[in-house]
Length: 453
Image (tube, rainbow, N blue to C red; front, side, top):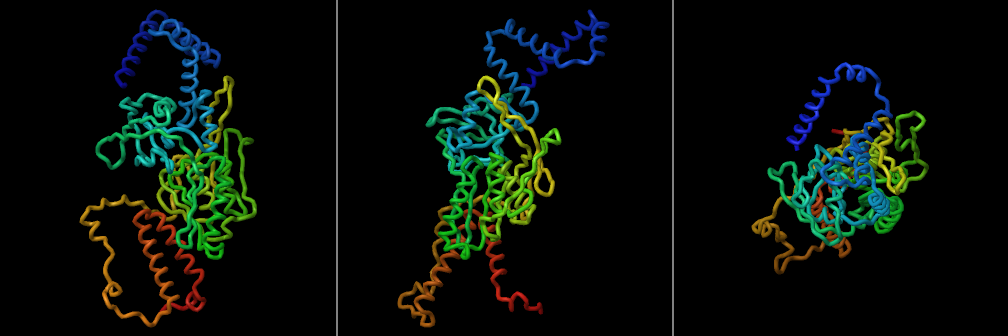
């Protein structure tokens, strides 16, 4: 690629030298004149016609124009691009929560495709693709030199077909290939579960369904826990959430804030700036909250995290977020296509921009890689024997049957918590924070107010 670029530059320089020798005074006069937009458009038209007439193969005029438009937009920043009619249709379908593909959100960095995050429950996630991975080849063909849309097109294909992508991962010495079978991606925007007395809300994306899914799942899990009085707090899991619709990020933030600014957007002109404020009402009813983030948390995820962090409504745990602090507007254009154009930066309530910086968690907690379990280690992990396992053991006559049952339930909860620390250390850490806050809140006054010795 570098050789080709240098050869092209060499040819251009050689041509310029010949022209300069013939008409140097005329060129000097022309260079002194300010170049108007219309002259530049004339230049574009001249080049377009020369390509049509003299290129080694016949070109498709429509594709050539689209490529020029996309080049103009993609030169601005990694998130501005041209959407041909088919891609525009696909984008509208994706925001509704169902589409075909691998299940990864990507951007472009240093000419390669970088994974922002894999989406839960998709072929990419099942294949072990991680946030921060670089995709260098698709089915053996390099993506270097392709636009992001062109690289994504290579990864698209019929549902059920297989694709091989070459991955470069930090900490792994050599690139490796991953085979993935394309599938229909059906996004469930929010999933919830109860861990002990904590409600965990996993938000995977911000599409048209996110806020309504959040309300429904939160209500269901609170009922499962026995009512809001039995809940010690909420974990909002935004890890590997690549973002989505700004309106949904605002609605989710508003769900847990009673007042104050959620986010502001500032465009090129002052009159285009907007501020979005919370309305009364807190779905969590003031219960403590922890937000989980990592390097795959981007855009709308960062809006929610920043709002809850700045208002001291939640403790943020995990690792630094992705750092996408810009707003894209999708503008339909003639021919049924559209352009995705970066039109503003967004700012958290305290006025900070996280563009290219990310949001730093209040408590940094890395997610350790699970250690491989050998057969010998597996044998060692058998449940240890105790007095209760011995034949003819004396019974415990100091506890009633209800007390014994309660003790067994407490032991089961402790074992589940220990298992969760192995499966998902960051989530277990978040739940432990809420347990600690709950313990402090419910401690007898005589203990809380006791003077230190």
